[in-house]
Image 1: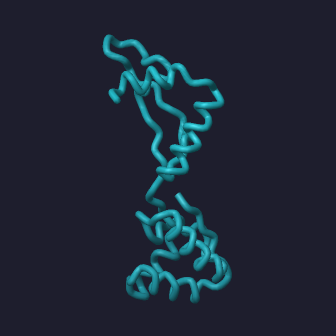
Image 2: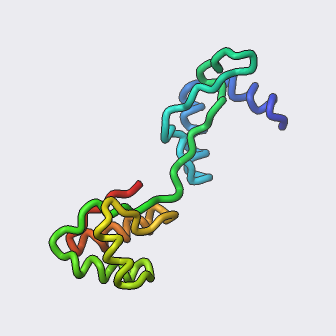
Length: 131
């Protein structure tokens, strides 16, 4: 089936059939049809703005997260030790990271890894933000 034939088939579907198709695609391929960020309007050839829905920009789901330390909390010594363990840095570098806020503890993590690390750091009283 060509792309044009596929699109012609979609054109003839009811709203209910389209909703079922989207749900089936989401389930089978583990994706979401929801937009993560607003679609940007990019200039079209000739200087005009691209029409809405032209597919000029596609929003992507965030896959890499940063764990950012916002506040050390009351257990600063335990936090420094934990940062040292997590990052593999020396004690001095870990203390400098805790003192220079906001500071990125770790970058390029999956959502699950970032949430687990956030929970670990919050357990010693730190205020953490995922970006």
